[in-house]
Amino acid sequence: MNTAIITNPIMWADVPDVDVIRVGSIFYMVSTSMHSMPGCPIMKSVNLVNWEIVNYVFDTFEDNDAHRLLDGKGIYGKGSWAASLRHKDGVFYVCFSSNDMDQFYIYRTEDIEHGIWERSVIPGLHHDPGLLLDDDSRNYVIYGNGDIRIKELTEYLTAVKPGGTDQLLLEGDRTDIGLRIEGCHAYKLNGYYYLFFIEWPRTGNMRRRQICYRSRELLGPYEREIILDDDLGYHNNGVAQGGIVDTPDHDWYAVLFQDHDAVGRIPCVLPVSWENDWPIIRNNGSVPQGIETKLPVAEPKPLVISDEFDYESNRLALNWQWNHNPDHGLWSVTERPGYLRLRTGPFTDSILFARNTLTQRTEGPACSAETVLEISGMKPGDRAGMVALQNGFGTVRVAAGEPGQFSIDMCVNGGDGSEVAVESIVFTGERVYLRIDFNFEDSLDQAQFFYSEDGTVWKPIGRTLHMKFTLDHFMGYRIGLFHYATHQSGGYTDFDYFHFIKP
Image (cartoon, rainbow, N blue to C red; front, top):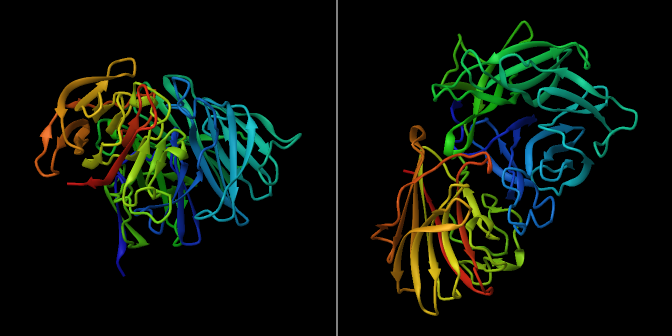
């Protein structure tokens, strides 16, 4: 029987803060989604290699001006952070903290692939939370940075348990440590409690590394071991933060992630061996690039898709996410069948604050995206097109001037978030093709912009964008389709298709 081969990275795209569980023969994974909506994507796999998005935990989790991009700031780099996924007695739980709301959210469902999730909210920030559903029917969340705390939750994880455990659990090293331990993943295995963290030392290899604490007693004392310090040969970027999972054949793997600069933080799967009851992530001192498994081969499912916008109902494929909360009254894939129609709403002068920017991830080592838009419905002052989205964005767009007057622009962030045109070309047609080429090979991190009048002859416009992963967005570059108004609402643009191309 053919079996799956794990080759890292398993996805060369921004899927950070991964947490994986197995239920029967199926693996499920959740990851951070921050300001992208819907959020907390749920992915499934039979082999830890080929993953498919099957659900989201929420469509939106708050509805205020910041989440709607109406406060001039948004929730870039905030929103849902470092989700934890667990399963117990037929119920799936996901929890995360939100830095902008200073709250801790716990969701539950009995149907992880299709179900609606019930929400509970607990006041206070619980940084990088890890759920521990103990085998004595007691439930905990373990969280923090450096100083790690434990808090007991009620039976169904809807609130803090009155009178339950609530204390400092352990203190991470301070000496020669830049980033102290965080990113907890907690397990009860073979009579031990295991707590997985990352830390970033200022000595030695000076990269993120994976740490494990263990104790036979929940409240300690805990022993400590470095279980992985490796960069897979990539620019000293440590592979770390995540947890472990076993297969039906009782093999163990760690699912972690690695910073890959502008494309984002990408997941890796590594073999785990047990040595003196410690889970060690290595193979004769180093991590192999290709890993033979006993897991079944499966048909690959794309993380990023092309889309002809041919839908029977007004619901997009799960691969799409909005930048912040959408206004569902201003977009449609059924109003004009076979097209994505984006209507304008509140005014802005920047793609960073445009409602209803529809996005997907970029993928390495290189990729391209193309679209075609019909612009006859645009009003003077409207801007519509395609964006390479991060704080250091680049757009290729149509700008509507006086009635019947249009230009094609390539723009970048002017430093204050506004779009500054690098090059502008007069355009007289009603249908324009746009393309962005991305190159993330070896962290080259360049994007180039093009337009075409017929979809065949492409003309470069503007300049090469040197992409940077910045912590104010804390997300890899995304491809987005947008249409916004600068001084009057009511215009619309029809996007005929979105094509995603891997070389």
